[in-house]
Amino acid sequence: MARIGIDYTAAVQQSAGIGRYVRELIAALLKLDTVHQYRLFAATPAPIPASLLPAAGSARGGPPAGRPRVTRLPFHDKWLMRIWHRARLPLPVELVTGRIDLFHSPDFTLPPTLPRTRTLLTVHDLSFVVDPDSADERLGAFLRRVVPRSVHRADHVLADSQAAKQDLVALWDTPPEKITVIYCGVDPRFRPVADADALRAVRCRYGLGGEPFILSLGTLQPRKNYRRLIQAFAPLASRFPDLSLVIGGGKGWDYDEILSEPARLGISERVRFPGFVADADLAALYSAASLFAYPSLYEGFGIPILEAMACGTPVIASNSSSLPEVTGDAGLQADPLEVGSWTAGMGRLLDDSALREDLIERGKAQTGRFSWEEAAGQLLSVYRHLLGE
Image (cartoon, one colour):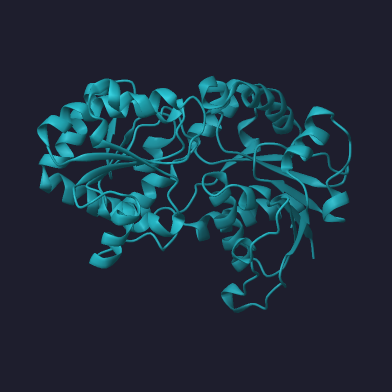
């Protein structure tokens, strides 16, 4: 019985993005795999809430492999980064996990390991190389130094999309055969919400009233391209007097110009920034929206596109990086640098009910291509390959 170590820190420390990826993928993996022993760790000063702890399953009728062992390191993960990647102290991760046969780091960087331990690294995207504004200056410099080193040392690398794989090959000369693409999934809880009370409650919670709105979600930062989205919305604000633009997400970096853009255009009362949206509210918020807009300049995948489609909301997304792989023919696509194309696309979705209905149906089919169970099965195959099973 092989022992597999996993860095579970992102699942505990990050509510969205990579945190959600790690929680969903590892939960599906542990339901699927009843053979291997899993040893997880998370660096976090606070106790880990029970809701974030993965549980073992017994899928396919097999006996449960036992609850995975989760070790909490009672300090912030920045200390691990300083020890392993800044000071480069050769303290192997096995000091935390105990003896393991395979170690999987699902969040860009690979810690030191003992020579016999096989290693797997997930690189979600290379935004910090392709678009340096996607991270603050110090973080970007750190990632550009450490991630290539981790990719080179890893026995195998996972990418979230073919676009991310192509970037790894083109920018860092990573051998294509060293990279496996595993698409993210969409949780079954994302489905159309028709309950009027639930929809009214989420509108009230985020101060949206009863008017129609365009929804966009993601951390407030330049890469998300919100300034151009707001500029594209301005002409629609004149055409549709009751329509609002709602941009949900926590504050990242360089967000001041995003927040001031509505005032500059004279549409402050028509653009809402409700802040971070709780996971429990997402399905109702997607369902309440007239359409979902995802104008990002660069993404390794784009889970919100699938979530919106699964909730029956028509989508318009950028035609850049991985996003065409996610959107397929189930949504409109627009050039993230062309404001006019976004105004035209959103206007079409608001005006053309037949197009909306067609895309809603296509969206249902598209989301069926992505599941965490499928992703977990592919991940388990990679594990077995690396373990020589």
